[in-house]
Image (cartoon, rainbow, N blue to C red; front, side):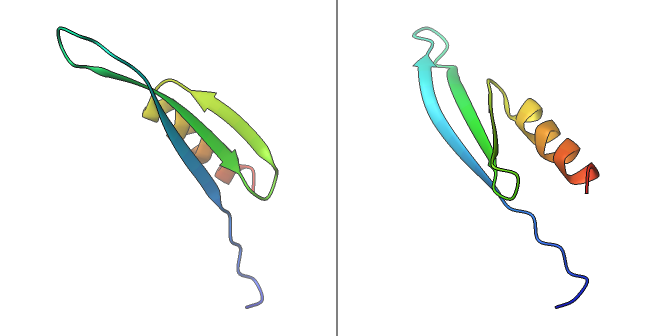
Length: 59
């Protein structure tokens, strides 16, 4: 397994609110980068994925 790099992330989704009229859901997304023990919280999936993307480019 030499030369192989494994990077792990945990995504946790917490339903914060549901708009009564539109039924649109608001989520809080917590992303944990396991190797760096770095954790961030986001309100949308695009920002959470960008965090992962940035973490991967640092390697």
